[in-house]
Image (cartoon, rainbow, N blue to C red; front, side, top):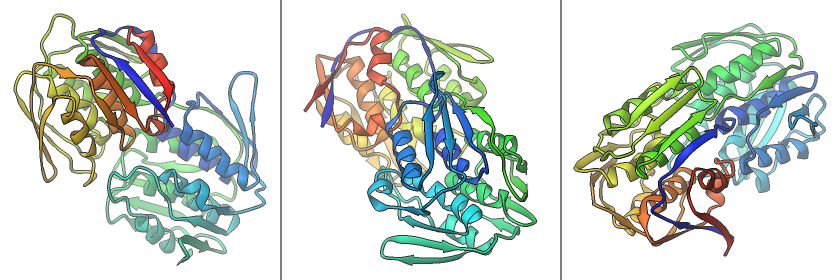
Length: 419
């Protein structure tokens, strides 16, 4: 099992390109199941979760070819199997995204109940209840979801809770349903719009993605297309915070700042100087002292839960006291104990983290507990004195493309080592 060795105290400076978004790419890979032709996906990030999703589709009989332009040609139009086995599903909750497309296209699916980061409850019942409303028959048996349907029928569905993957799953399933489906209480994340744009390019008829209501007029089949994955807003935000905590200056190219409005607002409140263009964000914290910022996480367009851990580090070395309220996941403060081992002064009170800024952090051996926790520990190591070792970094490889290489390019000193 690999680990990262970080020598702190380096100020990050320079320019990097943002990778494609994992949270956009995974549902798009699942959406290729719906097509009667091959689909070309461009700008896919090199991540473990992407590899796992490809292995999952490959196990069902999909053909995946990497061309000379580093684009992926995916042919999922004649799958030989509609089962997603536990050995692949257990490491990645996003594997549930194949459920809707399989039932819509092939009339059946057998999907192992998913695993992934242990950051809190992310119930699949939202997916299953909505599929049943579309006419599918659902049985839970021996740790698997078994779903069947002759053809899904459009209807009005209101989700009991806001769910990103649930919205995506049902949006994909309804694309091939008979009639019109109205979805309300839906997620509004940019990745929802990205998926709708891909599906529409394949011939679907989807309106309203990114708003309060999504309307899907079902079609008989979807066709092939070529589509580029948009940039990862969480990766971009992480590198901006890395510059902030190291009193550096970084330009992130390829990212639409409209997707990080709340993050940019909080960075500016912290004292950072931010400049944006239509596809870039730059941050400078040179010769400045961080100010504490209060944060409450909530679904888009509010402050993203996926940036909470990174801002915990920033607040930990700011001058003063701040509060972070986590309202999305009930178990997403697992990084706090590890940060306190590095000299942070953070107290947990239910869904509230009370952070008292300290003058400096010091290196330590720490252990990652989930994807974004991994990022926070790396950020803490960058601004700590001495040496930090982060273990269980397989979490970070699920969501960040070559993170140590990009940070080293900006001036960090990080080594990837075998355990």
